[in-house]
Image (cartoon, rainbow, N blue to C red):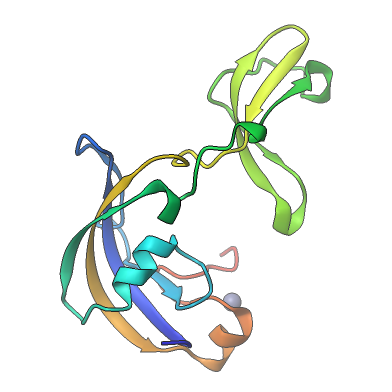
Length: 158
Ligand code: ZN
């Protein structure tokens, strides 16, 4: 299965059936197998499917975005942030390069800003509807880069 590129459509739903995210309005998502580019629970299923197969899959948090980690919720001094107003729900990038994370503001006071760097879906069991669209050999360039190119793949910023 290594060096295969899989393209698939998905609709992600929460426990109550509300749609969180879907690829249906856009290109199928593409990924290079075996490079941890999508959540493990989903990759495990997709590699067993044939083109055109559809599945409804329930994925436990541990096999999705992992457990919610309280250690990733931290208070920072207010003066480390821009002077303009900061609101709960606003996101900031913290860390550098490969280690950067997106953190969401969960509380603001005069002295502190609390940031939660957990993935928004951490600790959640997820329900996916998936459809296998295509499986193909990766190009040499994709293997070297470690990700899929083309529609639904890595865009290299354009
Ligand atoms: Zn690339």
